[in-house]
Image 1 (cartoon, rainbow, N blue to C red):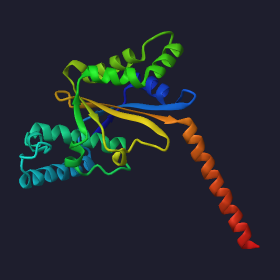
Image 2 (image 1 turned 90 degrees about the vertical axis):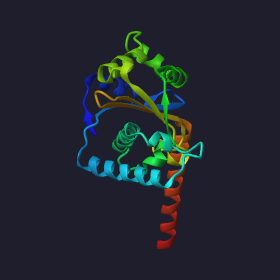
Image 3 (image 1 turned 180 degrees about the vertical axis):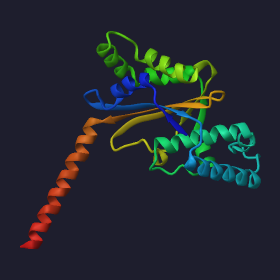
Image 4 (image 1 turned 120 degrees about the vertical axis):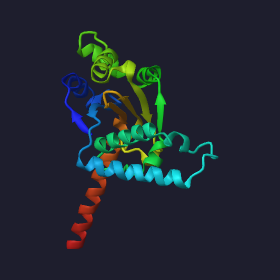
Length: 226
């Protein structure tokens, strides 16, 4: 996957980077990728494809929760692999080597679903954006930028909803998080939007605990020296 620099995303990312809302802080980021494999992408892509084919060879579609039917389509496998590769670029320190497991957490969405998520979780951010940008709409700015990159009316939209332990974006004090992907099959481009909200009170508590623990360790070393 090749990262695509696109200036209209910069102002949105700058705004959503550590947006302090008083009791909480929002961290959001929009990134664009071309589905062109780099050297490491090719290796991981082949590994994911072999894993899926091995799984298909050993599985039965009798289980209603089984992804066999979806993964039997070469086009669907390619889409899943692109999404997993995008995740691996977004979170380079996290292991996304299991495509079958990742499949369990991807869900195809409608644009209206994304707007509902936006309205539910980013209404305060939208208000701050309007104040800072002369009443303009954050959603309209995001929509315009995403559309210019991947043509929304031609996109497939996916959300990534891992279990709590498997969410690479969750931090200490996280209140919520979400990941959306806008994939244009013809253009072979993906735009990702990840966003989370951190409790400032919880973060301050964690920092206080860490400082207290460090002071205790220092006192221990002083006692040992005596």
